Image (tube, rainbow, N blue to C red; front, side, top):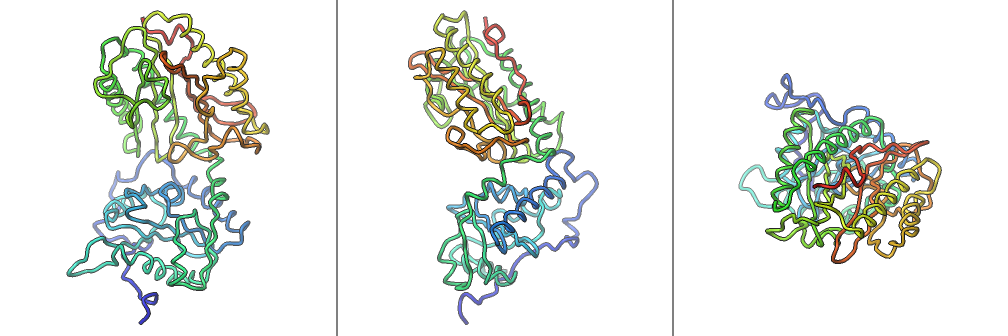
Amino acid sequence: MQSHRKTFRNRKIPVGSRPSSERLSPGTRRAFGVGRATQVYRTRLMQDLMDEEDLDGLAFTSSDYIKFATNFDVDVSGFERPCLCVIPRNGRPFAILHELSENHWHMSRNLDSIWISEASFYSEHPRTTQRLPLTSQWQELVASRLREARLHRARLGTDGGLPARLIEFLPRLHLENVSRQCERLRWIKHDEELSIMRAAADLADWAQERYRENIRPGRLVADLDTAMASLMAHEAAKRMPGADIGIYCWTLSGPVSASPHGLSPFGNLAGATIKKGHVLITSVYPAIDGLFIENERTWICGPPSKRQIHLFEAARAANEAACGAAISGRPISSIDAAAQEAFFHRGVDHLIRHRTGHGLGIGGHDYPIDMPFNGNPLQDNMVFSIEPGVYELGIGGFRHDDTVIVGPTASIVTKTTRDLKSQTIL
């Protein structure tokens, strides 16, 4: 028998028929997070895309798009252990996952936190019994599942991750890379998503106030961030018990902050401490159900110098101008243009090192990510980080980052103060 005609054994969980060990018990449903309203909204967006592009289905391989379509957090790296989610135009969606994710999948199903019910699993090691397809057979497994779903002759839109070699197993399958079109699925947030992002922003504001109380000369930067993340975790547990929440706190202190991302993957070298005279950038990034917001503030530890004051006020003015430009109907690029103009008028535009911002949502840096070059009009309920900054070697970085919802007037959901008096620690 031809290898592409193999039918692999699939572990599926049909809707409404969980094993007894998997049935919901009282209190297992998550009380906080995206739910039915977001699922319906995203499904409609995907259906509209399939209609517009005349597709029979969408096939996602990246963790961000799988999260978007299913609300399942893929816990493996795709280059090492590939995953797939297929959303047919007509029919039941399904996933193909590595067995490392199998118990995670079942537990998430038990919490009713994911939106599809069928998954097949493959293994990276041979078994003596209850064998599963191996990693080397992944493409055959995909072909088998597509054939079962009667999509073996379909026109599938992909996010760019399905290998062209799949055609060897399904010669009448047509794959079309619609990654650019898929980006727009994530541009505009549903009201439910916005309410969750507002809650995350309020939590981040709370954490920035804890930074205000704890910044002091001589403190290890890593100790400060670890302590703030701990406080934030306790506060999140009180505010939203059971939520799927990620907490990220990091600080750059002193001249090292002139590099927007610091000197290492973690920002600082071991033993870095806060010193009197340092300018600091504190970054707080909470994520709820994968929806990130950003809240960053610049602080000065001790009496500021004239140059620090000038750069601080330039960053504040650029932030305020850019936030005010997040108005429906204007070009997306106008946000970046407003910030650059503010820096130009203060004679520091040569110190810009990065764009003014990017879309926010799933995965942190969400679409659109090409703010300076994007002439498309801003639309209601787009969400952006607005983070214009200037960076002077030997002194440090100056950046205030707010999360802003686009509308007839911009809605700034991060409320932490950004004036010089409030941000100076004496």
